[in-house]
Image (tube, rainbow, N blue to C red):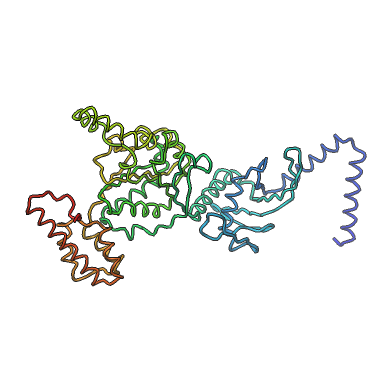
Length: 465
């Protein structure tokens, strides 16, 4: 067909359309137009879904954000024009599709096509009309895959986008504000979290380290299991042991291993059980909630032991005990128990709650039971495997001729990883000097131990001079 014939055909089509519109009744014309449109639609094999950036009243469409994140990971190889940015609170650079770009994707053996667009849209708000740039994605695919796209592909995109956001998110450590500050500026303040402690550098027993890592891995993979058994997706750890045995370092290593945020809860700044609940529900999922030295923050000691003490004391002494208990704050043991295991603890998911204490025996048994503190981790004085890790971290050595003497001395005296690390740090990475100084310290402590034993004194802590 030449251009002349094509022009004649087009002119004929325009003439017929004009005649139909001018001479047929409007109802008949609209009916014929609908039939023709449906006929053409039936011949088409592709289906399209439009995903706009904003819903009504300028509410952000979460699916749009998920698609944008997902396509950012897919478009590097195929799109010709990309946008590069670093969103707030992201630790990595991100790519996004530019306008009028097309990307193809394959899912479970079928292909789909994505395209990005931008149009001007008029929106009326409060009696005023304004023009807004409205971005949208268009998803096209064969109509026989409509059910798969709806039931599998879209949920898959959302899942991948959530993983990408989680990996890119800059992790933070939060601390709670006082009641007055919380009313005006929000309940939590935060800073970026960049603690270097990891399980690779942690100076604790290797068997214990392996057990903790396995427990954490099992926990984060059991979302469906927790739902099936009807329990909130959370887990409680109690870290106990003498000061300087690595409780804080372990918390940082756990957060780095899981890539979770940390909420460092200062109970002495909490005015009431009600405020404690508000703090809990304002924490995010995938987080570690920490209360350090819980025995010092509030009076959570065993109620049975306290009753016995009060019975055996005078009335004035009993009143003094009760008074001291009230001075520590208005958050009660009941409030803490509900915080850990009450109805409000199920808000959100994938949370780890960690309490630390130097004196486990002072805590109430109700707080220690499974379901509240599921795993009790005893961090004790330095043993030989932990010592070797410290020597590797601070001095850069795996072996040394004094290591055998150290191995003999460690069970006799009591030195924490913090004590040994401090000695190593003062030696400026001089391995021989570091091993010599730490062994001298051990010999000195052993003399103190021997002297106390000679005089019949019970040795509770050989580190004390």
